[in-house]
Image (cartoon, rainbow, N blue to C red; front, side):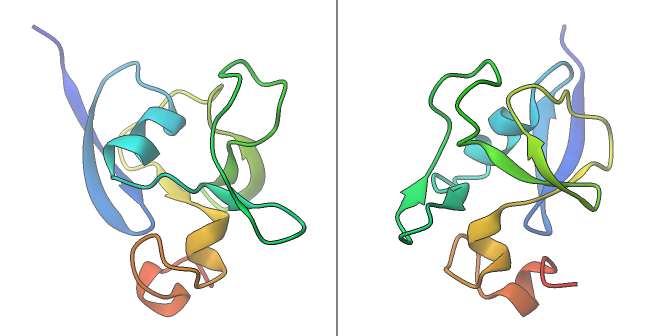
Length: 100
């Protein structure tokens, strides 16, 4: 039997299996755009091994973390760039708690 833990993606609680990466948590939350390209195009995980940098997000207040490499821990707070920019993922930046 696997253990589940609770993390927060754009301030919304998400339950994931212990040992899941932050990228998995973001996808379980239903978010498919992790960040924006310089031209404003949505980006998401591509390589899954820390080379492409498309999965970066803020984790526990530290920006530009590779979510595909970070294992979730209980209470982890993950903020996607898209939510922080107010582009939608789960409401605007004020509602997401990512603008602080």
